[in-house]
Amino acid sequence: MTLMSCPDCQGKLSDKAFACPHCGFPMVQQKGRSAWPGVIGGVAGTYISSQALIAMVLGSVMFIAFAAIMIAAIMR
Ligand SMILES: [Zn+2]
Image (cartoon, rainbow, N blue to C red; front, side):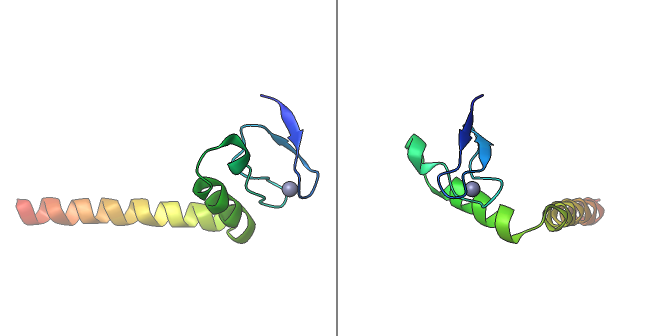
């Protein structure tokens, strides 16, 4: 892993990072891959706090667990 500078904010980031952790600048286009993961990562990193992300993940896990319990109850 190599550290490189963000072309947008000059912050240090890993060359494997999808987006700059400082400003959310998507880094993926430069490697020739699809831009979408970088854009989503950048948008998520910029506009969604890690707490909101954890709440969203926990919420979907709880929903899936609840659905599984309901299906199991119906099938019995
Ligand atoms: Zn940056």
